[in-house]
Amino acid sequence: MKKLSARRRHPMAALVVLLLALTAIGGLYAALAPAPKAQADDSSQSLAIEEGKKLYSVGCSSCHGTSGQGSSDGPSLVGVGSAAVDFQVGTGRMPAQQPGAQVPSKKVIYSQKEIDQLGAYIASLGPGPSTPTKEQTSPNGADMARGGELFRTNCAQCHNYQGKGGALTNGKYAPSLSGVSNKHMYEAMLTGPQNMPSFPNSTMPEQNKRDIIAYLNAVNGDKAPSPGGMSLGSLGPVTEGLFGWIFGLGVLIVCACWIGAHTTKAKKS
Image (cartoon, rainbow, N blue to C red; front, side, top):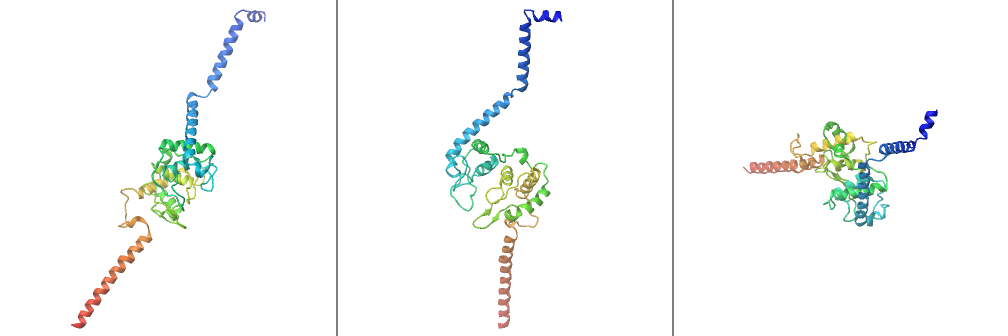
């Protein structure tokens, strides 16, 4: 005890204690402080939100409200998430040219960077579905046959069994899915744009969405087979029945006229 007391009274004791305390504080800070990358990510996200707010104020606020709360000309965007923004703006549906029963796709006026900034701002207004990654939308390794079953069960009533689209009520329609990117198909299922019901991951898991995308890529590809012969637009029984009525009845009428003409000639003879 006498030795310990003597050491405490040593002139260098205070300096040693101070160095030990500074070392401990430095170690704790290094362990608990946020990583530089995380800080950079936060700064980048804040900048994206700020830029997205500027874009929103110019191109979207007149219909959706100054804070995304919605108005008589457009629904609320609080809680729709960045996935809905990426789909609507990335397919040219938004900003809309004019009101109507349904907003069609058109030329995209924003760059992908601007779309991401808009999505970041809308996502900051309330939690919602996030823009999917390439891995989430990739059909690699997906079950195409299973995707066909899921599509015919959940989607074919409106989009036709091969995704060629179809008419709905009151001027609405289910658009063709031919040429639609994997990302936008995934986002449409995730968010349910316009007349389409939404299929969140709790209802339709991510793998099922990828299976459906794989099926649509197969049946709408440039080299998609048509085992029955002419595809007739792949619109199903409507065009097939119309083909049968026009050409089938046409052939029967021609045959009847030919028989009638030859019968008349035979009687005259």
